[in-house]
Length: 81
Image (tube, rainbow, N blue to C red; front, side):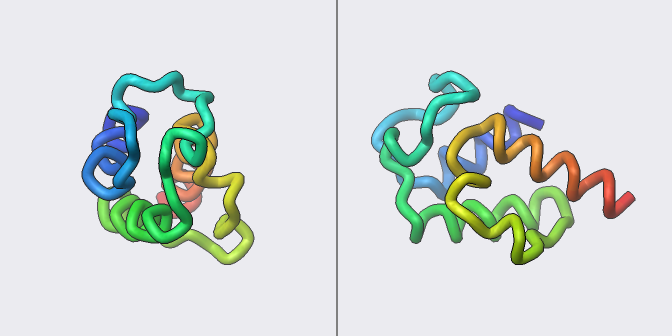
């Protein structure tokens, strides 16, 4: 799942660094992720994993790291199964 999330970040995150090379706990906002780009990442994640982010997960902390994204997406995938 982390690799798929990193692929989406690379395609939609418009970050200054390659998200495939950063530590999974690194702050993605410090790496150049913007709030606008995080919306594009969210939409791509929803398409990729066939989930929908609920309002309570639409916060900066959700998109702050690969680990955070994996935790939220993993929970959403399990709930959808």
